[in-house]
Image 1 (cartoon, rainbow, N blue to C red):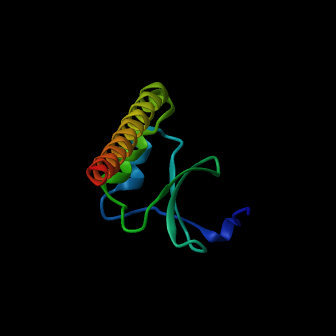
Image 2: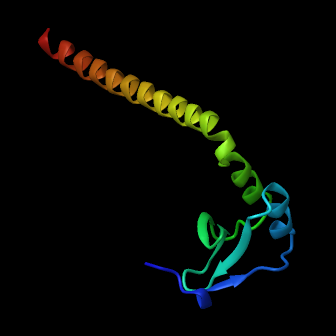
Length: 111
């Protein structure tokens, strides 16, 4: 669904100067409040780049913007792949532990 211009309110000033700090990272970044959705959004040339979770218009936004920049794409993909591999290993271990526990129960029933 397309966003109408009147739904986006430019944020000129905020408590932690997030809008100004965004422009230091990339001069094209603009901070808006989406009145229809009730959230802050970071946009470049009208295109949505990042949404800000409710109540997080603080340093976490700056950290997330820096972390998700295109320049960091390779590092971010490696981080995601590492997290997925860790989750997969944990799931495999949990399944193996569960199977071993079930087998131990059945072995006790055979005697």
